[in-house]
Length: 324
Image 1 (cartoon, rainbow, N blue to C red):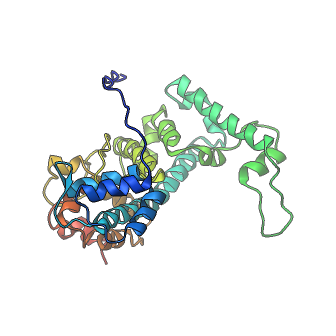
Image 2: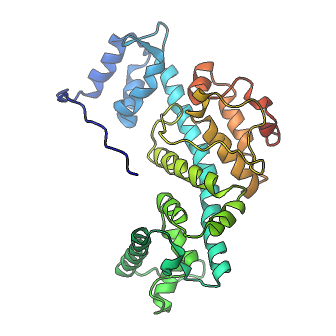
Image 3: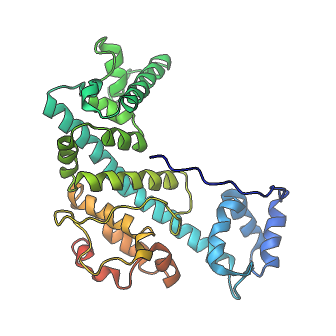
């Protein structure tokens, strides 16, 4: 059931734009120590004041910076967040690729049909299925309207979609292993959720070590996470609004210590746990957990609390398997 739209605010925005010099001056007036104004101005100019501003919040009290706060304290938090996003995107890439493969491999093999997705009987809601077909059709049309992908050198190869479209006439749309590569993560999530048969969902999820309910929940969260990271948004203490379900099945790799407190469940820590859980299945030799520990291991308690990390998080046997 669709949620009711929340009410808009009532105030009128009438704040005038400010130049870089004025913005840096505002930071100084509010107690931030900036030893090199030229350097700070360059960062503000190329990052953007209002992208940088949320990273100032942990260092402020009553709109003034805490005594001793420097520009580099804020910049350090910004750089950490950037590195965290890159690390998360690395995990999401592997997981997204694995889910695409699991979807097409199972459905094509199970029904012995490379074009299984054209059959409406595989889907629960006809309108969502029709939208999937429109997405694929539009992508094909746009490729045919675009410049041909030349193949003049042995090392240069056409894309699979280009090859299909200029080689085959029927079926009009490509096989599913090409189709899944056209979808955004959000569209992939919607396609999986719209599958008609529970057995298909279960088999796809099992191939990456999850149940269908958990995969659907985690995919929904990953759509939000990927959008934030791909658009370079603040991630370390953002309110996601959608969080991964905590597994109850013993078949799913998860934390072995005490149950996560509610404050941790509503932060990004369980997202990081879920990423490692799937990576353990689809990329078992990955050093992702070690890189995570190296990144957050030296962060101050303020950072760890904002991300929902429990105390002594690396002591949990779940992480112990992968930290090396």
